[in-house]
Structures are given as structure tokens and as C-alpha cells.
Length: 167
Image 1 (tube, rainbow, N blue to C red):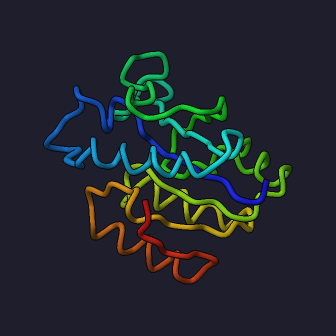
Image 2 (image 1 turned 120 degrees about the vertical axis):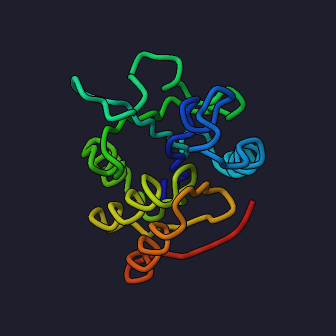
């Protein structure tokens, strides 16, 4: 397994019908459709999902682990059981994910989901610690804070990262 697709935060809380549409103003249907097309290009065991869940008493506005808002959004194709949880923006702060990638000799991670100015960007940068090449697929990333995304892109351009815009 050399290449994998990492889908971040495609949860009801962020892209579902009941989300805060002012805060999360992505074109969700279009984003979901694009990511589903990318999923179809990978074998099921090469597709990984990462969900954000709040931990502790103060969840900071994050979805709670067992609440419906933390579920993967209904329209997104779920083709594997490779689902990891995170409570920080960087998915690789969950060492289990990074160690699994290392154990499977993953070389390249195509990253998509929400938000380019937060979890997607932070996870892409965090992947460098595991010596992974990142494919940052702009067509499949929703972003609220464009300024923060620019800062992440600057960091990514200093590492092993390829920027693409493909469905």
C-alpha cells in the first residue's frame, strides 16, 4: 500500500444539512461529490477517514463522539473501516494513524476534506513527521479561513508536497 486517500472531518457537524451554514459555508454537495469521485479511484483498504471529536469537559464546540453530528456525512461513500478519531487539528497527533501508515509502508497521502485553514492543513504538515509525501488536492478541500490556508500552503511548499486540483 504505497498511496492512500485521507478524508478529514467530512462529518455531519461540518458538512451535513444541520451544520452552522454561516460558519461552515462550503458548497457541501459539490465537495462531497468530488471526494466520492476520488474515493472511487482507490481500493477500499487505501481509503482512510478521520473524524474530530471533543474530549473532556470542555469540548470547545467540537462534535461529541457518540452524537449524530460526529457521524460521517450520509452522502459520502464509506468503503472501509479505516476510521480514526482526533481531538486536535493534526490527524497525525493520533500516533496510531501515523504508526499504521509507517507499518504499511505508505509513501504518499492524498488529503481532502475540511478545513484547509485548520485540520486539513495541520494534518498535511503533521504527515511530514512520518516522512510522507502529501498530495494536497485543492478540488476536494473546503476552506473557511483562506489566510490560514495560505500559511499552511507555505509550510507545505517547504516539504514533500504536490498541489493538485483534480476530481
